[in-house]
Image (cartoon, rainbow, N blue to C red; front, side):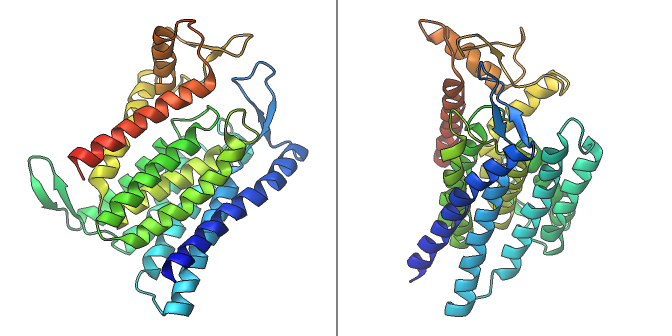
Length: 333
Protein backbone atom coordinates (compact mmCIF):
# COMPACT_ATOMS: atom_id res chain seq x y z
CA UNK A 1 0.00 0.00 0.00
CA UNK A 2 2.87 2.37 0.82
CA UNK A 3 4.36 1.73 -2.62
CA UNK A 4 0.98 2.44 -4.23
CA UNK A 5 0.70 5.77 -2.39
CA UNK A 6 4.20 6.71 -3.52
CA UNK A 7 3.31 5.91 -7.13
CA UNK A 8 0.12 7.98 -6.89
CA UNK A 9 2.04 10.90 -5.33
CA UNK A 10 4.63 10.77 -8.10
CA UNK A 11 1.85 10.56 -10.71
CA UNK A 12 0.08 13.60 -9.21
CA UNK A 13 3.31 15.60 -9.30
CA UNK A 14 4.06 14.62 -12.91
CA UNK A 15 0.51 15.09 -14.18
CA UNK A 16 0.00 18.47 -12.47
CA UNK A 17 3.10 19.92 -14.09
CA UNK A 18 2.50 18.26 -17.48
CA UNK A 19 -1.11 19.47 -17.73
CA UNK A 20 -0.57 22.98 -16.34
CA UNK A 21 2.43 23.82 -18.54
CA UNK A 22 0.57 24.32 -21.86
CA UNK A 23 -1.82 26.70 -20.08
CA UNK A 24 1.11 28.59 -18.54
CA UNK A 25 2.92 28.80 -21.89
CA UNK A 26 -0.17 30.24 -23.58
CA UNK A 27 -0.85 32.78 -20.85
CA UNK A 28 2.81 33.81 -20.66
CA UNK A 29 2.85 34.67 -24.38
CA UNK A 30 -0.49 36.50 -24.15
CA UNK A 31 0.74 38.62 -21.24
CA UNK A 32 4.21 39.37 -22.56
CA UNK A 33 6.02 37.10 -20.12
CA UNK A 34 8.44 35.71 -22.68
CA UNK A 35 12.11 36.06 -23.51
CA UNK A 36 14.42 35.52 -26.45
CA UNK A 37 16.08 32.16 -26.89
CA UNK A 38 19.63 33.42 -27.22
CA UNK A 39 20.97 30.27 -28.87
CA UNK A 40 18.53 30.14 -31.78
CA UNK A 41 19.19 32.09 -35.02
CA UNK A 42 15.61 33.41 -35.12
CA UNK A 43 15.78 34.55 -31.46
CA UNK A 44 12.32 33.04 -30.99
CA UNK A 45 10.17 34.12 -28.05
CA UNK A 46 9.89 31.47 -25.33
CA UNK A 47 7.55 31.54 -22.32
CA UNK A 48 9.30 32.50 -19.07
CA UNK A 49 8.94 31.40 -15.45
CA UNK A 50 7.42 28.03 -16.31
CA UNK A 51 9.16 26.57 -13.29
CA UNK A 52 6.22 27.69 -11.17
CA UNK A 53 4.42 24.59 -12.50
CA UNK A 54 7.26 22.44 -11.17
CA UNK A 55 6.74 23.99 -7.75
CA UNK A 56 2.99 23.41 -8.00
CA UNK A 57 3.34 19.79 -9.06
CA UNK A 58 5.92 18.92 -6.42
CA UNK A 59 3.97 20.66 -3.64
CA UNK A 60 0.72 18.87 -4.50
CA UNK A 61 2.49 15.52 -4.74
CA UNK A 62 4.14 15.99 -1.35
CA UNK A 63 0.89 17.16 0.29
CA UNK A 64 -0.98 14.14 -1.08
CA UNK A 65 1.66 11.83 0.39
CA UNK A 66 1.38 13.62 3.73
CA UNK A 67 -2.43 13.37 3.69
CA UNK A 68 -2.30 9.67 2.83
CA UNK A 69 0.07 8.95 5.71
CA UNK A 70 -1.97 10.98 8.20
CA UNK A 71 -5.47 9.76 7.29
CA UNK A 72 -4.70 6.18 6.23
CA UNK A 73 -1.69 5.17 8.30
CA UNK A 74 -2.01 7.65 11.17
CA UNK A 75 1.65 8.66 10.80
CA UNK A 76 2.68 12.20 11.70
CA UNK A 77 6.23 11.91 13.04
CA UNK A 78 7.92 13.77 10.16
CA UNK A 79 5.19 16.32 9.43
CA UNK A 80 6.92 19.26 11.10
CA UNK A 81 10.05 18.74 9.03
CA UNK A 82 8.11 18.25 5.79
CA UNK A 83 6.23 21.50 6.29
CA UNK A 84 9.46 23.20 7.28
CA UNK A 85 10.99 22.01 4.01
CA UNK A 86 7.96 23.23 2.04
CA UNK A 87 8.24 26.63 3.71
CA UNK A 88 11.90 26.90 2.69
CA UNK A 89 11.28 26.15 -0.98
CA UNK A 90 8.17 28.35 -1.18
CA UNK A 91 9.92 31.37 0.31
CA UNK A 92 12.89 30.82 -2.01
CA UNK A 93 10.51 30.55 -4.96
CA UNK A 94 9.06 33.97 -4.14
CA UNK A 95 12.47 35.55 -4.74
CA UNK A 96 12.81 33.76 -8.06
CA UNK A 97 9.27 34.64 -9.17
CA UNK A 98 9.77 38.34 -8.45
CA UNK A 99 12.98 38.29 -10.48
CA UNK A 100 11.17 36.50 -13.32
CA UNK A 101 8.31 38.98 -13.36
CA UNK A 102 10.44 42.12 -13.10
CA UNK A 103 13.51 40.83 -14.90
CA UNK A 104 16.56 39.76 -12.89
CA UNK A 105 18.53 42.84 -13.99
CA UNK A 106 15.75 45.24 -12.95
CA UNK A 107 14.19 43.26 -10.14
CA UNK A 108 15.41 42.77 -6.61
CA UNK A 109 18.86 44.03 -5.71
CA UNK A 110 21.47 41.46 -4.75
CA UNK A 111 21.25 42.54 -1.11
CA UNK A 112 17.47 42.19 -0.92
CA UNK A 113 17.59 38.92 -2.83
CA UNK A 114 20.12 37.42 -0.40
CA UNK A 115 18.17 38.79 2.55
CA UNK A 116 14.94 37.07 1.52
CA UNK A 117 16.75 33.80 0.75
CA UNK A 118 18.34 34.04 4.20
CA UNK A 119 14.83 34.47 5.59
CA UNK A 120 13.91 31.21 3.82
CA UNK A 121 16.35 29.35 6.08
CA UNK A 122 14.45 30.31 9.24
CA UNK A 123 11.98 27.36 9.20
CA UNK A 124 14.82 24.84 9.43
CA UNK A 125 16.74 27.03 11.88
CA UNK A 126 13.90 27.22 14.40
CA UNK A 127 13.28 23.48 14.04
CA UNK A 128 16.97 22.85 14.79
CA UNK A 129 16.86 20.55 11.76
CA UNK A 130 19.59 18.00 11.17
CA UNK A 131 21.98 16.67 13.77
CA UNK A 132 24.83 19.18 13.65
CA UNK A 133 27.31 16.29 13.69
CA UNK A 134 29.29 16.16 10.44
CA UNK A 135 32.11 13.87 9.37
CA UNK A 136 34.96 16.09 8.20
CA UNK A 137 38.20 15.01 6.48
CA UNK A 138 41.15 14.84 8.93
CA UNK A 139 38.90 15.79 11.90
CA UNK A 140 36.43 12.91 12.01
CA UNK A 141 32.99 13.51 13.51
CA UNK A 142 32.57 17.14 14.60
CA UNK A 143 29.62 18.37 16.68
CA UNK A 144 28.96 21.98 15.69
CA UNK A 145 26.31 22.46 18.38
CA UNK A 146 24.45 25.79 18.21
CA UNK A 147 26.67 26.92 15.32
CA UNK A 148 24.89 24.45 13.05
CA UNK A 149 21.35 25.92 13.17
CA UNK A 150 22.46 29.54 13.54
CA UNK A 151 25.22 29.67 10.92
CA UNK A 152 25.63 26.48 8.87
CA UNK A 153 21.95 25.99 7.99
CA UNK A 154 21.47 29.53 6.60
CA UNK A 155 24.81 29.28 4.78
CA UNK A 156 23.71 26.00 3.20
CA UNK A 157 20.29 27.30 2.15
CA UNK A 158 21.62 30.59 0.76
CA UNK A 159 24.58 28.90 -0.92
CA UNK A 160 22.62 26.14 -2.68
CA UNK A 161 19.69 28.37 -3.60
CA UNK A 162 21.77 31.08 -5.24
CA UNK A 163 24.50 28.95 -6.84
CA UNK A 164 22.05 26.51 -8.46
CA UNK A 165 20.93 29.55 -10.44
CA UNK A 166 24.42 30.08 -11.90
CA UNK A 167 24.61 27.06 -14.20
CA UNK A 168 21.78 27.95 -16.57
CA UNK A 169 20.76 29.57 -19.84
CA UNK A 170 20.80 26.50 -22.14
CA UNK A 171 17.74 24.45 -23.09
CA UNK A 172 17.21 21.63 -20.59
CA UNK A 173 20.35 22.32 -18.54
CA UNK A 174 18.84 23.38 -15.22
CA UNK A 175 16.15 20.70 -15.33
CA UNK A 176 18.55 17.85 -16.13
CA UNK A 177 20.92 19.01 -13.40
CA UNK A 178 18.05 19.02 -10.90
CA UNK A 179 17.00 15.51 -11.93
CA UNK A 180 20.55 14.17 -11.60
CA UNK A 181 21.32 15.71 -8.20
CA UNK A 182 17.93 14.90 -6.65
CA UNK A 183 18.14 11.33 -7.97
CA UNK A 184 21.53 10.95 -6.33
CA UNK A 185 20.21 12.39 -3.05
CA UNK A 186 17.20 10.07 -3.20
CA UNK A 187 19.58 7.09 -3.24
CA UNK A 188 21.83 8.53 -0.53
CA UNK A 189 19.01 9.38 1.89
CA UNK A 190 17.43 5.96 1.40
CA UNK A 191 20.71 4.19 2.17
CA UNK A 192 21.23 6.45 5.19
CA UNK A 193 17.87 5.48 6.69
CA UNK A 194 15.73 8.47 5.68
CA UNK A 195 13.35 7.07 3.04
CA UNK A 196 10.84 9.89 3.62
CA UNK A 197 13.38 12.30 2.13
CA UNK A 198 13.84 9.93 -0.81
CA UNK A 199 10.09 10.13 -1.37
CA UNK A 200 10.19 13.94 -1.45
CA UNK A 201 13.09 13.86 -3.89
CA UNK A 202 11.28 11.38 -6.18
CA UNK A 203 8.12 13.48 -6.18
CA UNK A 204 10.13 16.57 -7.16
CA UNK A 205 11.94 14.57 -9.86
CA UNK A 206 8.59 13.54 -11.37
CA UNK A 207 7.63 17.19 -11.72
CA UNK A 208 11.00 18.02 -13.29
CA UNK A 209 10.66 15.14 -15.78
CA UNK A 210 7.25 16.48 -16.85
CA UNK A 211 8.75 19.95 -17.28
CA UNK A 212 11.64 18.56 -19.32
CA UNK A 213 9.29 17.53 -22.14
CA UNK A 214 8.64 21.24 -22.75
CA UNK A 215 12.08 22.55 -21.82
CA UNK A 216 14.27 20.18 -23.81
CA UNK A 217 15.93 21.40 -26.99
CA UNK A 218 14.28 23.31 -28.67
CA UNK A 219 12.59 24.72 -25.57
CA UNK A 220 8.98 25.87 -25.50
CA UNK A 221 9.35 27.26 -21.98
CA UNK A 222 12.13 28.47 -19.69
CA UNK A 223 12.19 27.41 -16.02
CA UNK A 224 13.13 30.82 -14.67
CA UNK A 225 14.55 31.71 -11.28
CA UNK A 226 11.36 30.48 -9.62
CA UNK A 227 12.46 26.92 -10.41
CA UNK A 228 16.20 27.23 -9.92
CA UNK A 229 15.80 28.93 -6.55
CA UNK A 230 13.22 26.43 -5.27
CA UNK A 231 15.16 23.36 -6.48
CA UNK A 232 18.38 24.72 -5.00
CA UNK A 233 16.58 25.25 -1.69
CA UNK A 234 15.12 21.73 -1.88
CA UNK A 235 18.55 20.19 -2.43
CA UNK A 236 19.96 22.04 0.58
CA UNK A 237 16.97 21.12 2.76
CA UNK A 238 17.26 17.42 1.92
CA UNK A 239 20.99 17.52 2.67
CA UNK A 240 20.37 19.17 6.06
CA UNK A 241 17.42 17.03 7.14
CA UNK A 242 19.14 13.83 6.01
CA UNK A 243 22.50 14.75 7.53
CA UNK A 244 24.17 14.15 4.16
CA UNK A 245 25.75 17.59 3.81
CA UNK A 246 29.20 16.29 2.94
CA UNK A 247 28.20 14.22 -0.07
CA UNK A 248 25.65 16.85 -1.19
CA UNK A 249 28.44 19.43 -1.20
CA UNK A 250 30.53 17.04 -3.29
CA UNK A 251 27.67 16.69 -5.78
CA UNK A 252 27.71 20.48 -6.00
CA UNK A 253 31.30 20.59 -7.31
CA UNK A 254 30.21 21.74 -10.80
CA UNK A 255 28.43 24.67 -9.18
CA UNK A 256 31.41 25.54 -7.00
CA UNK A 257 33.54 25.61 -10.15
CA UNK A 258 30.91 27.75 -11.86
CA UNK A 259 30.95 30.22 -8.97
CA UNK A 260 34.74 30.46 -9.19
CA UNK A 261 34.59 31.10 -12.94
CA UNK A 262 31.83 33.68 -12.51
CA UNK A 263 33.87 35.47 -9.84
CA UNK A 264 36.76 35.46 -12.30
CA UNK A 265 34.55 37.60 -14.52
CA UNK A 266 33.46 39.74 -11.54
CA UNK A 267 29.93 38.31 -11.93
CA UNK A 268 29.50 40.42 -15.09
CA UNK A 269 30.24 37.81 -17.77
CA UNK A 270 27.20 35.93 -19.04
CA UNK A 271 27.03 32.21 -19.75
CA UNK A 272 25.50 32.65 -23.20
CA UNK A 273 27.60 31.68 -26.21
CA UNK A 274 28.21 33.59 -29.41
CA UNK A 275 25.76 32.34 -32.05
CA UNK A 276 26.59 31.58 -35.68
CA UNK A 277 24.03 31.82 -38.50
CA UNK A 278 23.80 28.02 -38.73
CA UNK A 279 22.93 27.70 -35.03
CA UNK A 280 26.37 26.51 -33.92
CA UNK A 281 28.06 28.16 -30.95
CA UNK A 282 31.33 29.99 -30.46
CA UNK A 283 33.22 31.13 -27.38
CA UNK A 284 31.80 34.53 -26.37
CA UNK A 285 35.04 35.65 -24.70
CA UNK A 286 38.71 34.84 -25.03
CA UNK A 287 38.76 33.42 -21.51
CA UNK A 288 36.46 30.89 -19.83
CA UNK A 289 33.90 32.40 -17.46
CA UNK A 290 31.63 29.39 -16.96
CA UNK A 291 31.39 25.63 -17.40
CA UNK A 292 29.28 26.36 -20.47
CA UNK A 293 32.24 28.13 -22.08
CA UNK A 294 34.57 25.33 -21.00
CA UNK A 295 32.24 22.76 -22.60
CA UNK A 296 32.25 24.69 -25.88
CA UNK A 297 36.03 24.85 -25.81
CA UNK A 298 36.39 21.10 -25.22
CA UNK A 299 33.84 20.16 -27.88
CA UNK A 300 35.57 22.35 -30.46
CA UNK A 301 38.80 20.51 -29.82
CA UNK A 302 37.38 16.99 -30.05
CA UNK A 303 34.83 17.41 -32.86
CA UNK A 304 36.27 17.01 -36.38
CA UNK A 305 34.02 19.68 -37.93
CA UNK A 306 34.49 22.09 -34.98
CA UNK A 307 30.74 22.72 -34.92
CA UNK A 308 29.25 22.88 -31.42
CA UNK A 309 25.52 23.00 -30.72
CA UNK A 310 23.52 23.91 -27.65
CA UNK A 311 22.30 20.41 -26.81
CA UNK A 312 25.89 19.10 -26.97
CA UNK A 313 27.02 21.65 -24.39
CA UNK A 314 24.18 20.57 -22.09
CA UNK A 315 24.99 16.88 -22.55
CA UNK A 316 28.68 17.39 -21.75
CA UNK A 317 27.94 19.36 -18.56
CA UNK A 318 25.46 16.70 -17.48
CA UNK A 319 28.03 14.00 -18.18
CA UNK A 320 30.47 15.85 -15.90
CA UNK A 321 27.78 16.08 -13.20
CA UNK A 322 27.09 12.36 -13.51
CA UNK A 323 30.80 11.60 -13.18
CA UNK A 324 30.96 13.69 -9.99
CA UNK A 325 27.97 11.79 -8.59
CA UNK A 326 29.53 8.41 -9.36
CA UNK A 327 32.80 9.46 -7.72
CA UNK A 328 30.82 10.60 -4.68
CA UNK A 329 29.11 7.23 -4.41
CA UNK A 330 32.43 5.39 -4.63
CA UNK A 331 34.57 7.45 -2.27
CA UNK A 332 32.17 9.23 0.10
CA UNK A 333 29.00 7.17 0.41
